[in-house]
Length: 329
Image (cartoon, rainbow, N blue to C red):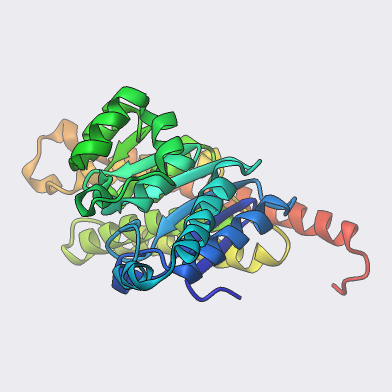
């Protein structure tokens, strides 16, 4: 449907990915038209609860495409005014959405990219993000983005940056109010999900898989080194990956989020592993006792929570079948 955008839906959360990474997601006629249409369509979709705007590649958006600007130089006044109105319309469609909008900014957010970040209700930026009204350096007044930048940082600060085109670091953007949160770039998606309660169905499952992979490698490593009996590692891995396989199979009926007991189990496993890593033969007797107590506790919780998941999956499947009697068992 779209050539310059990628629309990903996960529950009520929809992410619009600007997908022109080779030109740092710079605007051209097509991206402007498609982003306008996408905002209008998603705003009218009752299944959409919140919209996240992001950019593929190294940058959020570098603003106007230079090739588009070159074509504009040869176009008539009327044609340039029409293009300006379309750009303003795109920003207005984003800013006036009835759904909450979040800008996920990494890398460069220049010119119109800064405008997009300002037009969203919330802006979360990676530590390496940089903002600027870069068009000023070409003698272009940032008129289309100015209402949203002024709304974000105030008229006096906007007047400064509209005249100087200074680069604004992520930290400075937060001070100005342009960015609400600044996080490590690799943590952008997780921070947005947790901070604004946008945990997706994919995240509910994938986070626990990542945890299991890390703890599983630690258990295997300890057994290979002869520190931990293999029967403990086999029992833990059988439970972890058995439950993961079951949760994947359950996707037909519903998403099984990690239960509080499962999270406590992961914490206890991690603490126990921490006590075993130095090597019990090198540690005092009291350390040995604590390490074994933690590991036994982790094993008990591993088994108990595994049984809880099995019981819950049976209940979820029964509820789903009761609600869908036409489905064969």
